[in-house]
Length: 393
Image (cartoon, rainbow, N blue to C red; front, side):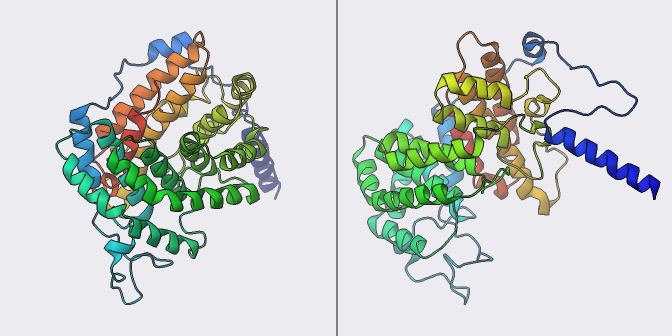
């Protein structure tokens, strides 16, 4: 019994140390020295890397991924039906009344359409641009958008907040596209986007606590993505809701638990994503002291988990490929938010150079592993590759 009590006490001590953001040393053993003494020694230890860039050949390669799955209806969902009737037959006229029915799951169809819009927007003379426009015309027609709006009005918490964030990201991209087709599709999606924005403003203002996980329900990532729409659409009610919610949830956070990343099959970095969000809702004078108390020193052992691209080479079993694809996507997402953080640091801050180098290393790792998970990865990783390549450097 005494042994059991002692073990319980030691577990409690360890839990308190982790919760407070401190690394507990093993009993009777001195704490391990930090691997680097300063930022310069960390930076000098990092291999050189050229960040993958979005040029025309790369755009063509990445466009093939959503093109190959956009009209490939996803399987019957385990919960509320969207595309399939109870009899396992598609709903009538779904190609005229729904827009987001391909690429394995609903939200991946939304972000795949965003990817195609962004690539043709960047390279109008892309060789596949005519077929991209043909597909976009069918998916983004007024009747399809009306069908999506009608469905979502009665769908409860379906795809909130992640899928809704991608709706707004897509709507903002279309609204900002000075192209006749783009403006037509922007008008088609506008009623859906306006309704979604109002729903999300209410959703965040009434949300009691944030989701801090590394997958779809993460609150910080949804708000961060929606701010792209807010900046273009000048949606002040949604901006106010996001800023107020972010400060309510995160302003007092300190010592983010970087050592726990990633958990399971994350494709988002909770710590880096929260920091990137706060960089957009706080002014620099407020944000920089907050960042200093939230993230550990980059040369410290606590930051080390964020410097290492996740190794997925040992994951080969078919039933684990979906999780493997998430970890590959994590490389792109980490790189994107690292670039964001580097861009808001003062020019003389040595952390900016470290973050940019790490972002490049993560991007290279993501590109190397993009096809290692088969269809589980190809239906969405192209989106995250484009998103990473468009992040500020």
